[in-house]
Every structure is written in C-alpha cells, then in structure tokens.
Image 1 (cartoon, rainbow, N blue to C red):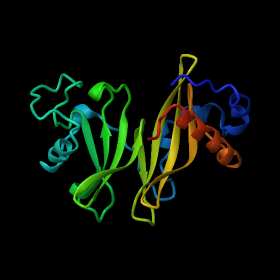
Image 2 (cartoon, rainbow, N blue to C red):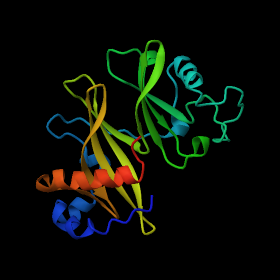
Image 3 (cartoon, rainbow, N blue to C red):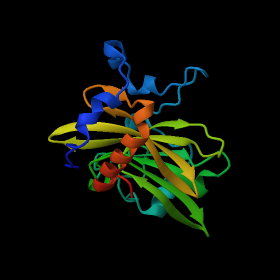
Image 4 (tube, rainbow, N blue to C red):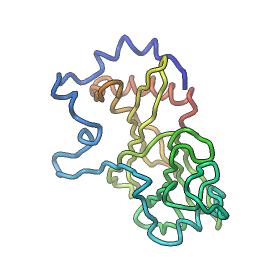
Length: 216
C-alpha cells in the first residue's frame, strides 16, 4: 500500500471534472445518486447497527471458516464471532438463494486484516466457491440488465503517508465481477474523472490496484 503515484499526478488536474467549490462539497454518496430516477443506490455499512435476517448467515460463515463458533464476545476481531458485528451479507442476484450465492462485506480488523474486504461466493456442486475478492469497501450497487448489480468499490491507497481513495466500477461478465474503470478519485475531496479521461485513467488505476494486491 505504499505505491507512489508519481507518473499519474501530472494528469490528475486535467482528468478531474471542474465544478469549483460547490462541487467539492458533494459527497461520494451524492455523486452516485441517479438524478433521472431519483434513486439512491449508495451503501453505508455500520457494523454496530448491522443485523442478520436469519440463521443462514451464521451457518454460511461457519461453512467458510471465517468466524469462531466458540467465541462468546464481539470484542475480539482476531477471533470473530459468527455475528453481524463483523459480517454483512448481500444477495448475489434476485434469483439465487442466499445459501447458494452472496456478496460478503467483512469489517476491518477481522482475522487481523486492517481493511474492509468484499468477497463474492457462489455454490458449485454443493461447495461455496470464491468468485472475487476485493480489499475495499462496497459503496454502491446499480441495477443491471444481467441480473447481477454493478458494484462500486472504494479502495484506499497510501501515497507518501497520505490516503487517496479510488471509487471503481465492476460489472458481471463470464461468471464473475470484472473491473470497468475508476469514476472518482478522492484525496482531500472527491473528484469525478472526466469522461474523456476515464478509460486511460482507468488503466493506470488498475495497475495500482494490482500492485497493491487489492483484487484477488
């Protein structure tokens, strides 16, 4: 997480949308609202307020050996309970039962890992198979004709001690989620990448994500 973004910095100013001070005040959540439909697809996860919908979630965590079934306290993320205090489930799609496919957001610090993680699983031949892994936070889902929502995942990057965030779009294709581009770069304030630069900037940011092992 210490990759230096030296070669990318000279083009950042030109690549950002320039909406002056008023735009700087727009949050990540507001940027991803779809004005035409007047809907907000953003996701904010407070694990302290999180809850499971049934016993299925805890059973899945035990199946994946991601929690400690013997743990009795929610105060030790190194030995996490099979609890919504550490894990949040999202459906893989509208057709697949949760037990057979899901997106799983894991709280930072769980099992000693410092970042939030997003894992995608689908059951094949009665075994849960990991399709994707991301060292980032799920901040938005957008409806897609494929039936699998597009995902916006927020990744951190440590550049000379300063944390920069990349909000990147992933789309379902060929049985897994694939990187599309990066829409927003957030240093001190979030700035959307201009349309004419989004492809070229997306290539460079994908290199950073790969070097930092943010996608696995």
